[in-house]
Picture 1: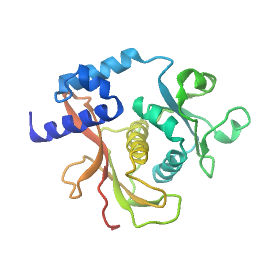
Picture 2: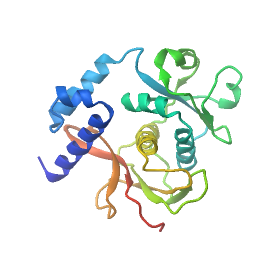
Picture 3: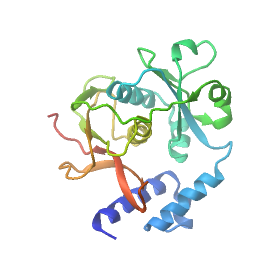
Picture 4: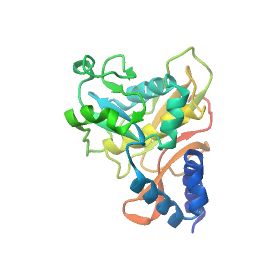
Length: 242
């Protein structure tokens, strides 16, 4: 195994241990085979006890959505956030207009322009009516090209700043939502991102040759080479704006 693959396996294993320490007792998370076995175990055991969030997307602009996602996570009850973290911050993305749904459904957070809304983390059946009403958010095209974009998070401004990277090679816009969502909400829950901080969203083909070390990394199986992992998105250590 190459040093890069070893690092990715280590980072993926640490994420599993953080969310579900019990899995580390059953699977060898230092190997790719052990990680995949742990993932299959989680998927097979998914039940009504699993905690998830439903996000309704009306209009998507990634930088604005990233800021609103952090605003949602900042407002979470710590107990609910911890339950959601244990379920690996599972989020179901649906296509719809929150402005047309607010009288029927209670959202934990609605973006200021109603482009997106999030439910409180809870058991899957709690969101069954909403999930039957709306279709999954489907965006098979890749993320539109964009310049690096500074995102100022809500709250009293701080000096905290990190770069938020998205690997766009082979990534659909729907994939980008999933990858960035995991990185952002888990960074908030883990205390890496605080209200008033800022992020610079950077889209690159692959997360290779990044000078600033990553504090959090979204690691997934390479769909073209299932015996390898790849970095899909990442949040760096604190770094000056620039």
